[in-house]
Image: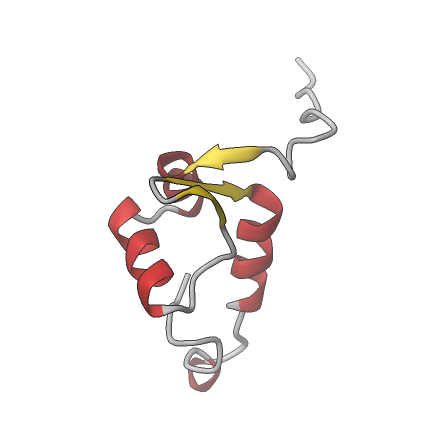
Length: 81
C-alpha cells in the first residue's frame, strides 16, 4: 500500500504543545523551559494559556541544530536534537 501525502496545510497547521513535544521527541517541560529561557522553536501564543506550534517551525528549528562534528554542537544555542 502506497503512503498517502500529508494535507496541503500539514506543515502550517497549528498543533498542541503535547503534539509538538511528541513530534520532536522531547517533553512538554523541555518546550516550556525553552520558551522561558530562549533557544527553542518558534511558537504561537494564542492566549496566555494556549500555546501552539507549526510543524514548519519545528522542522526549521531541528535543521538549525544540525552539526558536522562535536565542536559545532554549542553553536545553535546549546540545545541538541
